[in-house]
Structure formats: structure tokens, C-alpha cells
Image (cartoon, rainbow, N blue to C red):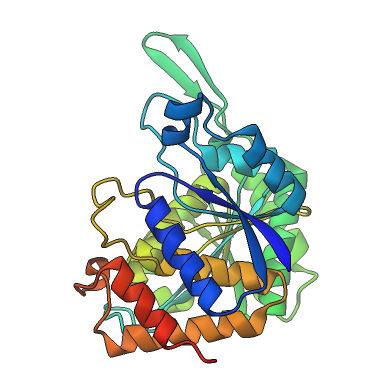
Length: 333
């Protein structure tokens, strides 16, 4: 029985953790959980956003299932997501966006995997105050981190039978940082002759994703562009409630939904647990439990196709508990 660490965050975090752990238990997942409260509520109680015990658990178990954590806008503490990614060198953020026939959108055939560098760029949070009227953010791009994320994107494409990798950049303006990233992409791409390569400027990418999402397969990009584009891909498939995420490093892995803590609906019992559940399925595949992950995915697809127990964010009226129990009822024994 493998132990993993679970962080119950803020807002809807505790609700979707409860729902997903119920489903995992019903699917007979061979996992034990070390569960910790983290975030602003934990800080209010004990003066730390993440306790020493919670960090120690992740240090031991090396696998983390983390629910959303509220990050203040424009003030307060730094994003815990960014801090965890940097502390544990979770450099590869993999976000697969796949259309579901049960969720009606103008784009029925989207399957875009965003592979995002997760530890540098402007999201490294290196800022300086020049004066009360001038602030600077420093964009950091290194060869080593660019090489490993680009190589990981090509390896992902090869391992999953994907046909094309698109490098997204702004090298026409940021000729040093984005220019180096683009050059590395083309250099590494020579080692993958069976995979089509293309590069595209970030603004053109946004337009083309909306107009022709079918032209994209695997996208590799820098930190900020990846954050923005993966939310765009979520919009193509029906919303953030359907987009899972893996944060992978050489020694540690963290799995989380892309959406935030949604404090406006916290406690109302209507949060959509599916993105977090699909993130848990990515965790299961990461540890070799592919059959259990497939069973859960089939159950979710059945519930969505039946349509009775969809949550409000994807056009239904079901509660979190109703959606959860419906998924459990469709798990294969």
C-alpha cells in the first residue's frame, strides 16, 4: 500500500478532496493518505501556510495530491503553487485538454496537451521596486531548464503517439530569452524526426487556438504563456472544471486541478470534482495504476453522457455529492 500526501486547500478545496477520496476508495485504489490543511486557513490557525509536518510528509512520500489554495491578488503571500514547484523542482507542468461529447462546445474535437516550464520565466517572482512609481519584473530563462522541458515535451509526444509539437514564444520581441528557447527547440527537434515541429508567436497562437484548435497537438512553452494558454484550452473544452494537471520533477510529483479555490461557491455543495479527479487519475497512471485510472475515467464519461448529475459549471444542476455518488455507482467492480 503506497502512501501519498494530500493537501486540503481553501475555498472548495476541502469539498473536492472529500469527493475524490471517496471515489478513489470506492475504486479500491491501493493508497494510504496523509492529509493536511494548508493555505490561509492554516495560517490563521497556526501561523504557517504549510506546516512542517505537511512538508515532511511530501518529502517522505514524494507524491502530492493538492487541492486549490487561495492566492491574494496584488498583496500578501506569494503563490503556494509557485513556491512548491520551485522548492521541489516540479519543472514540467502537463495539462491535457480533451473534448468530451457530453459537454457541448463549438469545438468537439480538441485534444491539446500543454507542456509548460514551471520554475522560471517571470513566474519566478523576481521583482524589484525602483521607486514608488516604477516596479520591475525580471524574466529568467536558462538553457538547462529550457532543454529539459523541451526534451520532455518531445518524449511525451513520442510516448503517447502524438504527431506534432508546437513551440510557443515571443522571440520577435524578446530575442534573448524567448530567442534562446526557440533555438533550443529546433536543436532538440532534430532528434525526433518522426514528429512534426512548428513554432508560433504567442499572440498568433491565441488566435489560432480559437479559430483552428484542431491544428494543435502538444504545445511546449515558457511559464507564463503556458499558464494562459492552458486556461484557453480549458475554455475550448467547457471550462476549468474539466482540466487536470500534473507537476512533475525528477524526484517529486504534484497533481492538482487547474482551477482556483472558487471562494464564491465554497460551502454551497456545487463544486465540480471532475478536474481534481482526473488529476488523481494522472497520479494513478504516474504510479502504474493505469487500469484503476481507466475505470474511473469510464465512470466519469458515463455520468457526463447520461447528463443527470452534471454540476452547474458544465450545464447541470447536480450537487458535488450527487455527482460523486453517480461516479461511484458506475465504477466497474
